[in-house]
Image (cartoon, rainbow, N blue to C red; front, side, top):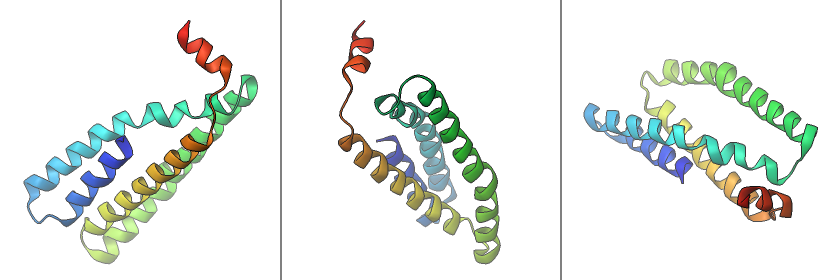
Length: 123
């Protein structure tokens, strides 16, 4: 749900001509960005255990930081330079967040919860 909130809010910020409404869209996207981390990191314990889970978290963080912190800056700068507006940037961010929601939803439906994860949550 958080990824859908971010995607919708960024889509609103991309298409509205009113700066105040675009600012409200960005604020809603920021709220969603804070809520997306729990499901993001919550998927891995269903697949991995022990040292493999630690390695999985490290891999997820490394790839996320590489794509978002390094490559993402170049993509945003390139789009901003080519279009001379932030609308294309917000549209690409909205589409990528929507893709994230679809992927997480597909993974969530395909993973069966393990018995020990459920038992830990109960205790």
